[in-house]
Image (cartoon, rainbow, N blue to C red; front, side):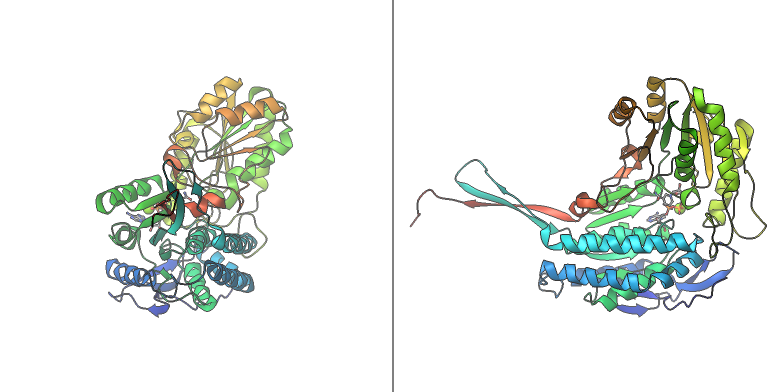
Length: 487
Ligand code: NAI
Ligand code: MG
């Protein structure tokens, strides 16, 4: 196993490294062998209060941050992106230690995230309002102002991209932040905090407070001085956050939640290519992906061939030590391992298991890539988010039938279609209810395009131009505009 130097384990508040007020710490676990990597300071309400105070002070109207030119906010972000590139190898090794994802994948995520920082750096001085030909003798225009102190509550599946999806647009817009990383993966968030400081951001602009959800996360969502919370995680916690926002101060909320996304493959598709797209759509990041296409719908004419191919690819998927050339490491923790295995057991009782179905080894949270065929829409594995390496293949006959079935979910994050028939693809795009639709590809999420969900998959969008709009308030200004001088 790689030896990774861990430099930061304290809370990052007001550009300083501090212990928790309670002096408490919590262990972060290596999912590869279940060992404790290190103890991390455990933030709670008292620490969140201090971090919010720092962020509020940094947002004061005469603060260094608020009086900085927008272009200079962009320059600070560019510096941060360069530092991420500089440290990408270290950050990826640290990520793999904490999260278990293959180190080459972690490296790619860090480089991608640095690119997102650059995208928003360029936007900092291009957040434009409009001039509006309003009724009456008036001049009307809008100002786009930073929303204020933002709380970011992060998941563990893509720790660095999620940190950046939240802080980059917020900083470009001129907000300040308190970030609570997931308790499973605090280490890269702290390493990124050190880079934020090194880049030269003023004290209090970004604060990072690791801790547990109901305590640290709860304190952030209930804080009356937090103007907005951006959250990625479960739909269950998304509801808690929306309720807290409603009860306390109507803080703005953006939610990036779960999914049960369908990928629909028609008879005219090349079976090998379609099976490959479907495999990657289901198993990317060990299936720990909100937009994973976990419902594979295959038209009857190619169904048997497809099932055989899907099983073959899954059996070949390399699972093991994430510091080596593998495609899949362990699941994140014991809780998720147990949850995924219980779905697999339920699948074995109801559907036909054609690949995997078991643990890999006896140490660490490794699970075989698992494929179920003959899955029907009422089965538990077809309805609930599994968040593990499990593909469920369903058979369908007609377009009308499959569109209804694809839409028969409370979620609406992603959807995909594989076909060479442009009319089928266009009709699918038109009728499917999802925040992202992919044709002959899947999970192609880009920096420039908005990402988010319909229905219970969330609220608001991240990335692209929409991403920055979630961090600004609209101020409408109207001046009396006389036809002649009033004097
Ligand atoms: P979670 O939603 O409980 O945790 C996500 C983040 O929210 C973490 O930082 C956690 O500390 C925080 N949190 C938890 N309870 C909170 C509360 N009461 N108030 C404020 N913050 C709180 O997700 P968890 O438990 O890690 O995984 C459960 C399920 O959620 C997974 O099986 C999966 O289905 C889904 N999930 C979806 C993700 C996505 O990318 N949309 C990411 C992670 C999990
Ligand atoms: Mg939870």
